[in-house]
Amino acid sequence: MLTLLGMNHRSASLELRERACFAEGDLAVAISRIRESTSATEAMILATCNRVEILTRAKDSRTVEAELRAFLAKDRGIDPETIERHVYVHHGLHAVRHVFSVACGLDSMVLGEPQILGQLKKAYAIALESGSTGPVLDRLLQQALSTAKRVRTTTGISRHAVSIAYAAASLARTIFDDLEGRSALLLGAGKMTELAAKHLAPQGAAALPVTNRPYAAAKSPPKP
Image (tube, rainbow, N blue to C red; front, side, top):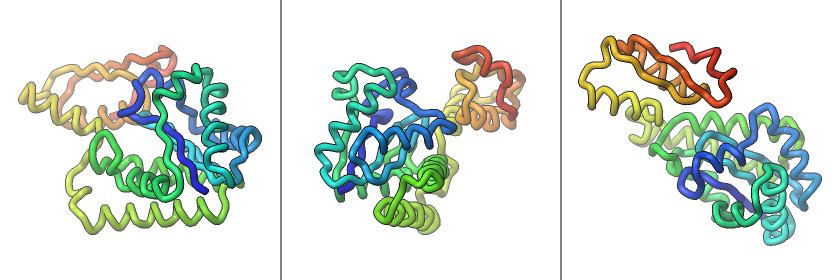
């Protein structure tokens, strides 16, 4: 039985999502810890700035659900009651529908944003390389990725460039009419900030200072 436990921009604050998130370089080890501490026979973690989701296959879905709650609380140092209030859980076909919805950009903060497809593909590749997938997750993820590509090709969901960064740059241009010679403070030093810089620079933004927590990450600002 499939079980998906996660939190996203609707269920948890940015601060909590940051605490629950796994760095890309730590995903393989984290998946191994899930396999060691739970009854899951297959496992994958999708971790982005807007969501943290653990997808597993286990014999008993209710047992693994409780184990995943306990794992996330202990591994990320979060109070179990906080986990209880802010995570969502899907089992079986509901988990399948959720994965397809995420892959197609239907569950994103900005409808249809394209970054999630690459992020899901990378998460699957890491799980596959670590030997943590099997016949069920392999088939599910391959079908979800294939369907998402078809949806973006045959529907209007990808007709316009969409992302949080693009939306922010468009809103700034709407408010100020012209960004020529203006400065924009970029908060954070991740991939979304890099996208924001790429959208703002061509519109004439004169300076793009970066601030970040911790400061060291801001010393190498994104390149427009």
